[in-house]
Length: 107
Image (cartoon, rainbow, N blue to C red; front, side, top):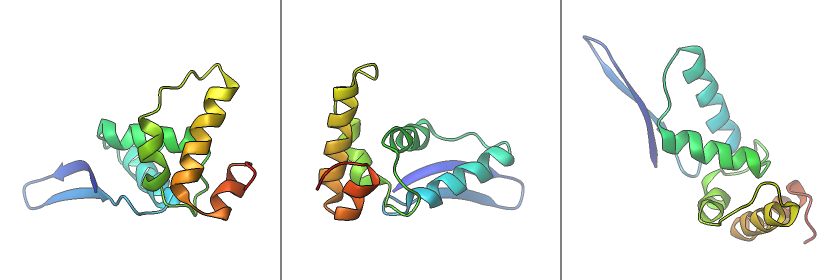
């Protein structure tokens, strides 16, 4: 579980929680709400979502299972093969045919 920003006022403290098994679309929606309310995101949340966007994860796919192994792979963004390898690692971590189809990779 990744914790987002804490919202504090005189009466309550609210912590936004980004569940690791939540869908990518839920993460994106929660980030949009934070931006609309002027709430800064923790760098771990922003980075995980940036990796998910780079991997082009669909909204209906769990975010962290494919993102976690992909974050540990050195990647050269100007090299198409490097990005393809990153997507393959994410697909393997997802272990599903829908994941491979979403990434445009053969199963």
